[in-house]
Image (cartoon, rainbow, N blue to C red; front, side, top):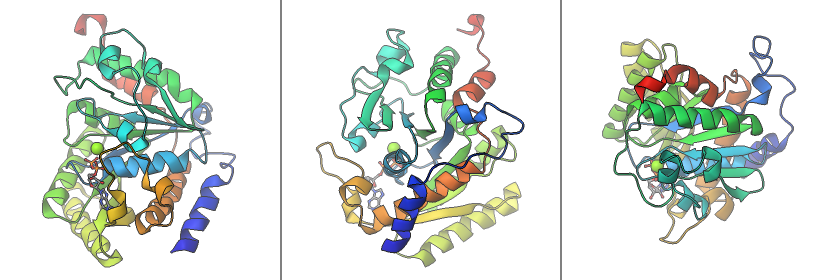
Length: 299
Ligand SMILES: Nc1ncnc2c1ncn2[C@@H]1O[C@H](COP(=O)(O)OP(=O)(O)O)[C@@H](O)[C@H]1O
Ligand SMILES: [Mg+2]
C-alpha cells in the first residue's frame, strides 16, 4: 500500500505531459486550468475532505485553485487551516472581485473560501452566477488545476458548475440513502449535460470488496435507467484520523501522510491527474459564462 502511494506521489510530481487530448481542436486549452468538481447529492459523504486532500496533492503537480462552492455555509477554509479574508457576501455585494477573496494556502495552492457571514440563501441569481463565471474565467488561466467543492443537493448552480467541469467526481458512501442521492445527482447532471461520465469515489468503507459492491449497485441502476454505468476511480477507507478537532487543521494527506486514508487519497489524486490529462480543458469559467445566459435585463 505504502509503495503504491510513493509511486502515486512520484507520478504527481513528474512534469505534466507535453500535450493534452483535445488540444488539436482548441490550441488555448493548455492555458486554462483543468477543472474537477467534487459532487454527490448527499451531505456528509466526505466531499470536502476529498477536495481538501486533492488540493494539497495536485498543487505538487501544478498551481491549484480551490473554490468553495458551498456558498451558504462552506467550510473549506477550516479544512485547509486558513482564515478567510473577505467574505463571499462582500463579493456578492460587488465590493470586491472574485480575486479579492483569494487566500494563499501553501506554495502552489490558493483558496477561494466562502468565509464568515453565511448568506441567508443558497440560490444565487443569474447575475451573481455571471459574476462568478467572469471571475473564474479571468483566474483560470493562471492555474493548472481548478477544484470545486460542491455542496449537498442539486441546486441549479451546483448542477451548472458540475456540468461545466472537465472531470466530475461523485463521492458517496455505501449507505442506501447516499447511493440514492448520488444516482439522483447523476441523473439530473446527465439531463443537463447528456453524455457526461462522472467518476465514482467510494468513501468510508472497510474493504475493497464493499467499495466494489457499492459501485456495482450504483452502476446497475445507472446502466438500466441512464444507459451508462459509473466507473470507480478509487475508494477511501474509514479512518478516524480523517476527523479533525474543533480547531483549524490541515488535510490528512499533510497531517498523516502514511495513514490508510491519506495513502488512498494520494493514489486517487494521481488517477484524477491522469483523468484530467485525457480530457479537453474547456475552462470552467469560460464554459459557465457561455451557459449562464445573463443579459443586463435579467438582473
Ligand atoms: N474516510 C473517512 N474516515 C473517517 N471520517 C471521514 C472520512 N471521510 C470524511 N469523514 C468525516 O465525515 C464528515 C463529513 O465530511 P465532509 O467532507 O465535510 O462531507 P461533505 O463535504 O460531503 O458534506 C467529517 O466529519 C469528516 O471528518
Ligand atoms: Mg462539504
